[in-house]
Amino acid sequence: MVSNTMRAPSSPHAEPAAQPLLTHTWCVALLAMVCCALWGSAIPCIKIGCSLLGIASTDVPSEFLFAGLRFMLAGAIALVAASIAERRPIRVKRSSLGMVVRLSLAQTIVQYAFFYIGVSHASGVKGTIVNASSTFLTILVATLVFRQERMDARKLAGCLIGFAGVVLVNLTGELGGAVTLTGEGFILIASLSYAVSSSLIRVYSQRENPVALSGYQFLLGGAVLAGAGIALGGRFEHVTAAGIGMLLYLACVSGIAYSLWSILLKYNPTSRVAIFGFMNPIFGVVLSSALLGEAGALPWQQTAVALVLITAGIVIVNRVPKHAGSR
Image (cartoon, rainbow, N blue to C red; front, side, top):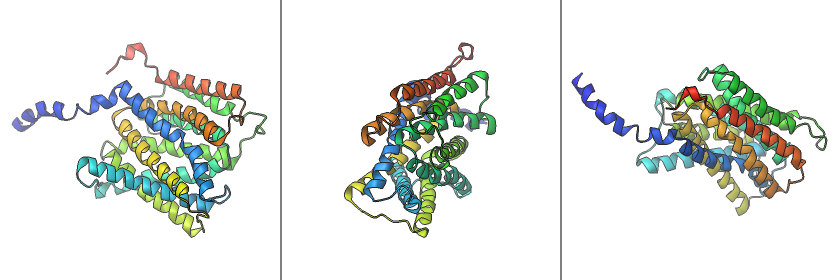
């Protein structure tokens, strides 16, 4: 009783110093924007990386090998950086290995197996906007499946309006007006898997270091994808310095962005963090247009309307009723 009373004053000085900072809107927005800028560059850079390494869009085994190596490197980068920062090796408890396996299945193995195939069969601009559905799927999964938050009319309206933007971009006559299963369909499946992983990391990070969870799940998931790629005959036709450089960049994208995102999810409600994902399609469209020369792939008016709908959905979901107050 006495020791508990004496510890109480020190606890507010030890923990709240980190917690309030990561719950401030400006801090959440800043870190989330960094993540989204990195993720927005992923689609065009995956296409460029595959081209540099001689991987054809139909060569699924080699795409799996590429993805697997990327995520193994991402896991190593996250764990080494965290270990250096904390001056000790970062590990997860043996009892938490099940968390790592489940998180790896949702976040890396299932998501990216579908994502890589989908990206190779859809344009960078179109694939980026379809991938924006992960923002709204994350909110739906967190509220309806995991019951981490309450679904209300405001969140539902925001999700529907934002998702309308995703649908709109698939109705263009110039691209045939059709959604292909192996293109946009697979990207949508990858987005659903990501939504599940976001709710899992929100739960698991209350019991484990989120960066450690990120690092180990990337190592495991990457090893599975790389192993599958090698077993199916995947290989790199051309190994160049530029190709390896792009692979390393993509590894940093995953290691840095997902670790930051996991930390934000630890200290904030899922919907509050996920909603900043609206910047993914904006960064993605701009970078795909610039790096892949896809500026004319979609009518700019249609693309603009789609992005306006997505942004409107974000604003509606992110708007806190005045009577709710702030903490």
